[in-house]
Length: 241
Image 1 (spheres, rainbow, N blue to C red):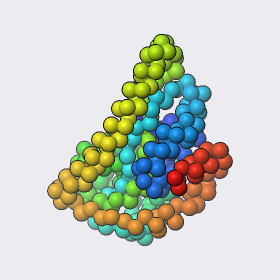
Image 2: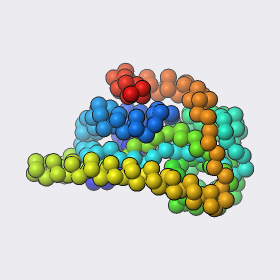
Image 3: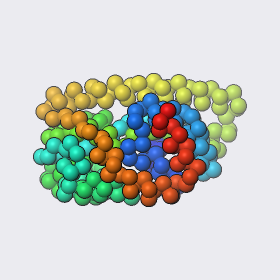
Image 4: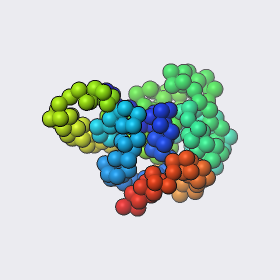
């Protein structure tokens, strides 16, 4: 049993990569409705076919960009920047669409790579930007919010089925209850992290997301074909609710 960033499941079920589409949700509330609703149920069915039971949807939060020297307000500001990204093709294609030069790197090597100037920039949730002390090697934080990351509280199906039906119900109920609290804690932690990063000397910049959203349309077109009309239709139905 574990709390796992849902995008990590795409190694065993490629359609789980849908959760990594850039700029999917106008707000966190839209994401909550989708994952607590039919989209989350459809993804849970995909994972159950892989012998994993998703008990509830929590979150890793929104991902943002930090840079060493350049303030990022538009995709044009990313042009030519070497940025470390997670090693999945959609993230690479997203930052290529912004005009950056993305490359994967093990997280354990990232701090030193930023310190030595091997990379100009990186992208992560605020909690990681703070806990990894990236403010020591990056001057600027841009609140791009380019990906909302759900996390799945998951358990192997064989372990879950060894529980009584009553205990299964208790576990699911607790997972949902604490998932709601974790989301609230995540929002508060993001607000606190911004102030903490400012206090450490980082500049914090709001961005106009419209040009970023326009830049990733080709990414949606390419990967939408992989995820299929049923999942994409569910996702689209929640975007405007």
